[in-house]
Image (cartoon, rainbow, N blue to C red; front, side, top):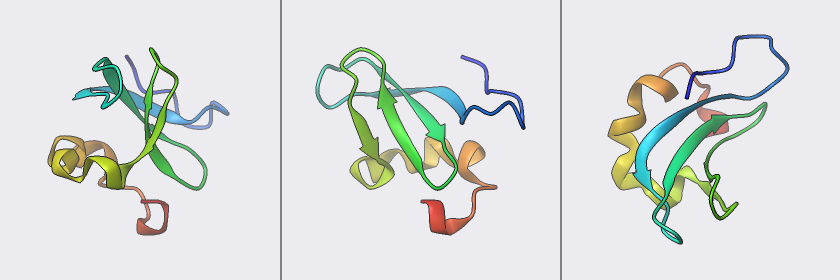
Length: 71
């Protein structure tokens, strides 16, 4: 999945190789206006990054320019 263009009016997002804890489908990481979270398209669950701290190294490039108050 491609990241949404800057100023597109949509959250910036990208696919990951991280599995959903509920259904084991791959999650997307989404950068919204005031938060960053993981989302499963299959089961519709939304997870805070704190639920997947063991995978934060995999997301380092994506979250490197996000203000800390959103994480």
